[in-house]
Image (cartoon, rainbow, N blue to C red; front, side, top):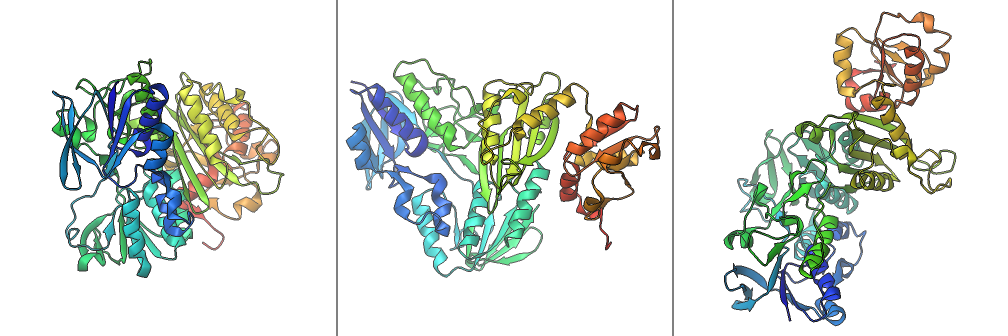
Length: 551
């Protein structure tokens, strides 16, 4: 009978344990969890703060007793594995101030990731600064919230944004601090700007490009690197995570980038009979085949199941991850998959980026809302490198579809061919995923040339002129400096107002009508390009460049 010890529960560890039992009824399976809960909804913790998840008990997915009864697992909570002896295949376990020794045939490490907390002057003396990783952390925060009115969240990644939203919903005044020049760094800056605007619209004070320099008065005063001092009754540190690797390191297990555990395609470490899964391991970014740390629940669950298959003698390999993620920020949803434009540049990928704006379902059906979709792709071979989306509804559907397309090695030429269920309450006959595929093909085949929002000014400096083809009512709400205005429906009749020797950058609200204008003018030998994302993106990123009637 094989004896398998799993260090750490929750996503990776419990997926491994339950899959092992389904495959190996006669195995002895022991799960060592240093905390009091072996299976809890880590991703749901912020939503209990606002009361959106009303009952704390709802966060406990499975109890040790329930897992024992159904899967015959030996679940040992409050058992911290503090040492591994690979030579005699034993682990040293701390339980109630006692040191125990347990042998194993196979060992799976699923220690997860821990919050990264930078060294900050005064942090050790602060009595109101917390991180949120598990249920005991949540309990401490809930106690601190009783009399709290002012909150600071340090870090504007996915967890930081969720914390900011739920603290506001609880009634606190929230300041969100992000060291990067934008919130939600995994997104490109023009997409992240919409998230920042939504935060501000809901009363969150957003400070980017700075971080905490010092905690004063036991954490009640937070001094930033720009000298600003913020009052705080509660501060949440959410600046990122790092692999929980001390146990692996002490056992001589090889570590790699950022201290992550190095494993092969079968989740084996460099030490025989020791495997690792979850947030602590280094994976392959599937698009670039480069090393990456991707701390997400879905890959961890998949890895736990796959390592169980490997141990049971089945042929399974880690295919890598592309980092698909989503977050709700008040009435806005933001999601991404694969490479951002910034990551594509860093990885020396040849790419083009496109934005389109569509509706989450048929525009004529009540309740339709705008959805902005961005696609990053290689124009030479059509490879889809990544995508991002923003909107009130339907964001998850579109990013999930494109993530599936990436995993399935589909290209931009396949996107228009994808078939979706369609009825007016659910979607559009021309889904935004289909439409951005068409737009990408137009670029790849040379039917359209695009200029990005951040490239417009340099084109203007080099002699180009903006041709705005929006309606006059739209132009009245805001217009480009020194632009020519000809509504697209009038363009054929007013083409004589344009100079054939003048290069034009054409803009409409989102890029759709300006593409029509581009095709008209190109076929009359004008030199033109389409402003990607149109006025919507440019006005979001460069509001100081836009003229209004009262300017």
